[in-house]
Image 1 (cartoon, rainbow, N blue to C red):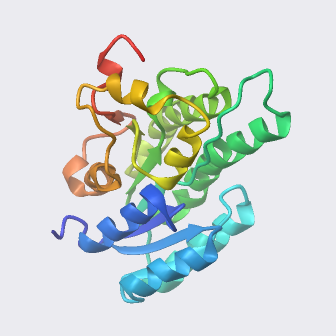
Image 2: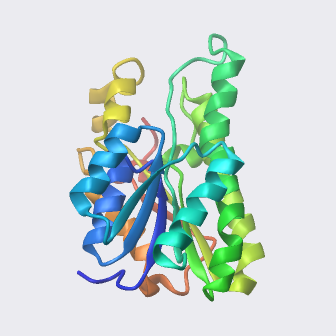
Image 3: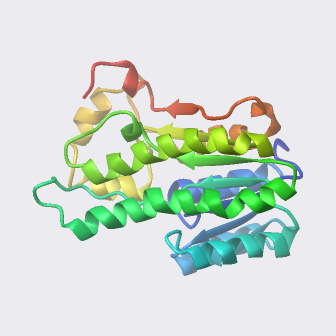
Length: 251
């Protein structure tokens, strides 16, 4: 414990699922955390459990430039600096290209890709003022390979992968590192709910060398490593945690 002592982090989509796990793990590792979501009741409950000394919640729609400015201001007001951004907020929806409404496709891109880009843009100033920082963009194995029914989700996650590399090139001069994390199947409510209407779960598990979904905490430990000084020479890189999914011929 203490890997993130002295760090101040902003985490998006922190009210449930992987984001909630990231918030808790960062706090346990010594970070002070401001996290946002649109699920205000759930977010406030998580913040209350952790306490105001290490954790604050703000309403945060990642597609809104105004909300990004408000969230960054809340971090600086509460803790005086910003060292880490975890672009975790995301949505997942199955639908074939033939059947998916354009509005759904655009919504997924707006939240997953545009929200990530707005986040990186919003933190450049305060991270530069702090002498550098670490941006961790949560992509997916779908940022490497497509799947039927996930054209919008895959497009957004490929976009995150590309933006991460471009941002690493631009922001290294300011001491800001930018990396992407690519989880495979993770046991969160969002994934479980969507899996019921999409890909066959048993077939997916059968394609994994480890034979199981990840627990959210297993991804949070990787994210914390990238937030810490232990990863000080890693930028523009892709960190995969997929149970071996991408090592095989597909599923």
